[in-house]
Length: 395
Image (cartoon, rainbow, N blue to C red; front, side, top):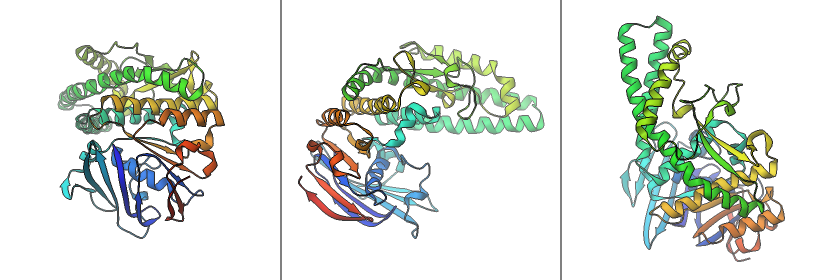
């Protein structure tokens, strides 16, 4: 997978931008706040339909405009595609592939990328919601049909929560209880598929995380990751004071039987029914689960040093890229490293450059040219105030 050309219109601080990209390493250099991250953020949007920096789309549109356009000319196995997304401030977003209108949610199947940025430190140190989002984006990249399953699950979850809130405010009636049972079955059916697929994905990631951590950190700190399930353990919220460590860690390979997961899910809903009615919210399911990260036999969150946390988060992203390279029909994902090298010492910089050196295309941003190892600077683009000031400089 290659990006041959990126075109932006009214995206962030760019009124217009045209950038030619090459196979191998492409480095965007510029002082902080000049717009280099905006370029790679736009490409990341094409593979996830979201930004790694903000939760909504409005911030992506130039402040004086009503829409922004991301257009990329892609190449995969000799075939060229023109992919375009129009992000609208007050209307539904639109998308095209080779000038033909497609549904926006179909765009990620045409472009695969793995982006690592300082914000990804939250994978180790942040809340469960970020880890769930990471897993689900990777799942959809590998198995596109799961996007529909997740959308349906969110719709059922919303409907069920509405019913629980209504029951809390008015008192539960017989008809409401019957309706709740119906939503329970839909929640279990869809949620169990997500749970099984997440556990399988974590199992596939484990060996890649171990090798990637060793490659980046230069030491074996026994990195481990495992799923935690709300249908088995203590109930927690992302913003609750209760620690996520209270959720049960699921042994590897123990969730392959979907019927068993469905049985556990139903039992959990029965067990927490009273609490759900009291609070007016669904307390069990994949929307409440987490992923446990461990280093040296201890929870990474709270025990790992800053450098270890960085290495772990980076290893998880590199493992994702390796998994997509192995499983995806589109071949190598485009690897994006946004302002990463400034956070690493010289040894880790060199090891990271070696780890990504054989991918078809790598995009890097940096405020300081000398922070980036020489082997990744062959094609350098200089950015200043939303303008490409110097392109195709061979270092």
